[in-house]
Amino acid sequence: MHKRVILALVLVFALMMSTSCSLIIKDEAVDMATPVIEVAGQTVTKGEVKSLIEDIHDYNEQMYSYYGMAYDRTSDSAIADAKEQAIQGLIESIVVDAKMTEYGFDSFTEEEMAEIEATAKEDYDLYYDTIKNFYFSGTELTGEELEAAIQAEMLNMVGYNTLENAVEQIKYTKSQEKLVAELNKDVAVSEEELTTEYNARVDSAKASYTAAAYTYGTAIVNGEMPYYAPEGYRNVKHILLQFTAEDQTAISEIETAIANLAAGEDATELNDKLAAAREQAYANLQPKVDEITAKLAEGIDFETLIAEYNEDPGMNGETEGYPVCSTSVDWVVEFKDASMALANVGDVSGAVRSEYGIHFIKYQSDIASGEIGLETVREALTAELLSAKESSNVDTILAQWVEEANAKVNEKELNK
Image 1 (cartoon, rainbow, N blue to C red):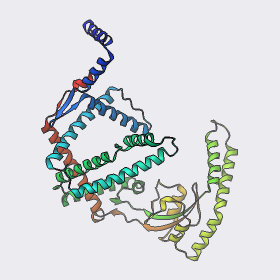
Image 2: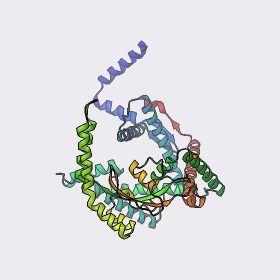
Image 3: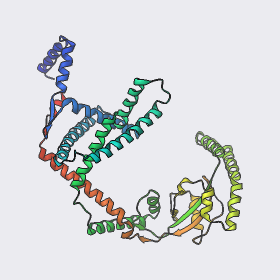
Image 4: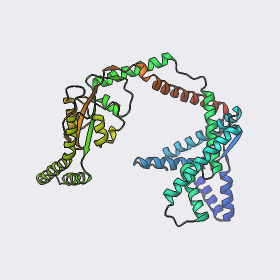
């Protein structure tokens, strides 16, 4: 650092130390009031930008922490990213506000206001009661102190702490919805676009699932749309009898003890205990196994038995069942092998043991190989493509508005 710069800093420091505290506070206030952004007739101060930057840092810290990651708000990259987000976000917000006013979308009829106020009251009361009951059920606070504490927590969690602010938030959301609807009123998905995208997804799925058939089942389990099905898949349903909580605890404790053995330490005794514990757990399920076996022999419908005995929550609401093939990786081996061993649709297995308990498995249906058909996915795929086009359209128009607004940004002030 040059000597002249050092001298200047020393002089500044000396001036600050010799000045009254009130003057320092006043200078800070003046500094924070310095205009940093000027756009669409609005001015944003240094203090407002810095406040938003800190909010962005706080949010990033919270999100990183949620995923078990560290966020360094002092790093150059974090500071630069937060500053860019804050500046861009403020400019876009002001430009959008101006456009909502220009279109008249920030005005509401009496009927609309009545609906907004009713919704705001409902939301406010719900959040207020939830926060009060969850965070302050055992508090010693009363009266105004309790009210202030609840409202502070509301502000932190939902962004408002008065009914009036709730109304304003809903009004703003409604205004944005009107603006977006106006911008996208002519956006549509053509038949050609739909067909092209469908064919591309079929080709992609076919290549993926043909190379590794098990990935089809994984995709289905994860809720993805199956545009193509490989050969060799079937749907199965099952009744799961889980180990009792006591038996599962005993098994888990032995498994933990085995896992904690030192390298080379003899596990024979623990393995014997584990085998005995599992046998006991299976034995404790035998009365239910006998009941189900007898009812199956009587011809009682498998769906009825699922409703009565099944303890697999994933089976609830499954209309088709679980997709299984010979190379499936989503199910324990015992379940997969027993499912594929069933010869004909409608066949039901005997009691099948696995680490989860005992299963009775029904061969529900075959899954036809080949593409799923455009009509099967037309509605969902159209909605997905339309949403993407609308989002892209809004982004394009917003970028154009921001460019036309020609915002003036005094970014150097933020670094002082």
